[in-house]
Image (cartoon, rainbow over all chains, first blue to last red):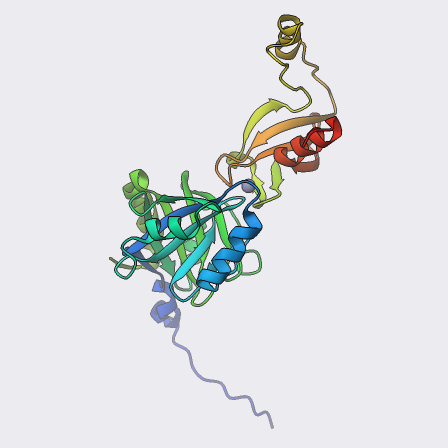
Length: 195
Length: 97
Ligand SMILES: [Zn+2]
C-alpha cells in the first residue's frame, strides 16, 4: 500500500553531478575606484550628501551599499571604497572629490587594486583555503564586507547583495600571487576561469 | 586567542599586532621633569599577572587601534574598546574638548 516509488541511481551519479565543478573565477576589470574617508566630524554630513547624490546609504558596519551607478563598500571606520563603471565615469575620482568637498578626502585607487570574483556552490570552499573568517551564509550574509587576508595577502572582500558573488580586492603588487593562490585553491572543483 | 574588533567582529590573533601597555601616557617633552618622566615612561613598567590593559592594532583588518583588557595568565579578554574612544573619554575627564 506504500506510495513510495524507488528509482534506481547509478553508483557513479555523483561523479556526473555538475555542482562538483561549479565554481567560477573571473578578473573584474573596468571599474573606477576611489577611497573615501570622512573628514573629522563630517561623518553624518557626508552620509547625507552621498544619499542625496546617489540614493545610497553609507554603511557604518562592514557591508556594501549598491546604488544604480555606484557602490560604496565599507573600508574601515568612516572609510569606504567607491566604485563605478570606468567607461561611463572616466573622471570618477575627480568628480567625487568635487562633490564631497569639505566632507571627505577622496583618493584614486583605480590602478591600485586588483579585483577578482568567485561564485558558485563551491565558492566558499575555495575561499576557506586562505580566508580566515567564517563565510557561512549565517555569519557572512549577502551584502557583507570584510577587511582580512587571503593566503596572507591583505584583501577587502564582499558578497554581493544580489547574486551570491564574492569580490576580493587586493593590492596591485600582490595581484599575481593572489591569482595563483585563488586558481590553485579552486583546481579540485574544476573551476571555470574567465577574464 | 581571538579579539573582537568593535568594527570588524571577532578575528584571530594573526590579524593583530601587539603594541604595548595602554595604561601609560607619553609625558610632555617640554615639561619641567621631562627627563625623569620619560625614564619612568620608558623603563618603569609593571608586569602584572592578571588583568592588564594593552594596545592592539588591527593591522590586517580595519587598522583601528584597540585597548584590550586581557588576563595575562589565561589570555581571557574582558573588554575591548577603540583607543579613540578611550582617548576621547580621557580628554573629557581632563576637561579638554
Ligand atoms: Zn577591525
